[in-house]
Image (cartoon, rainbow, N blue to C red; front, side, top):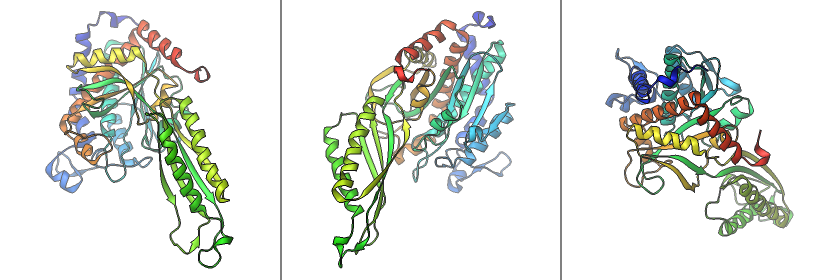
Length: 435
């Protein structure tokens, strides 16, 4: 590795990042969401020549694996900056990959851009995309400016919301060879119960999905109900059993479900029902134990009603493996930009993310950064959608991207820091999860 970076002051590195991102500031804002009164009323963007541009990420919310415009717009933007982009990467149609550099350690940035049904970008994934794109551009510029070895990967990771995009990309080899994975998620400044500009390290629940189908036998509900086997009774009994189970689980564990297919008439004993469940626990071990208890409720209901049952387990999101070195360095870099960031929050946030799966494959930072929100506003609420589209939120995403770029710089140029992060990660992995 070259050693020219040793003579580069932190101030010069930050100034180089600031200069690089200032040159693309307008384009980054437009890629996220170019706000104008007319565009808001039309739901469209207006170009400099007065023509209507394609809808951008915030203004055109797209659901899991349907993020076609976001995918195309980001790829177009990156190609316009001179990068080679692989579209529809790793067999996932709305994923992409862009790599800068040819040798050295590989730093990955994850860009999410999927939205929620009916309420758009109420989780602010447009800001995740913005911060990761900014980080990729900044670190790529640093690599070229100071002639250091290193590879920087920007990976488009669709379908974080109930789609497990990163898990599919992992299985397809997208993270093979990644040495460090970095990203940041927007949220309210008081997300962890105390005012701050963000949290470097957060714990999130492991989660798995169960799809449950009951098979019974039709009969006339008025004429000969005794000849039927009631699949709705099985579903209701399973629901009641799980509801009772909820009283006996740990405070940070969660079980929630939805009925997907139930009878539409009352005069037929139903032969089929289908339901969908999400089970969450702070650790993989706890999750497996809780799933076993849920399965007992589901299988017991089949036995008592005479139905047969099919259970499919899918959609595993693991817990997040925190990394002290990455959290500490990111906190320091954000302080350099005037942001007060908590190093880590020890209480589990009971949501889940597929970035947990990535944290089992490489040392990972999944930080949170605060954006301006009204009192009581949190992600997955319609009020957060508007907050995620503001100029102020965009500015925080860009500053966060600068902090992520500086952390990536550390991982490429400081062997001791990288080795520390890697050793901590290896020491935290369960024995059966180690490479």
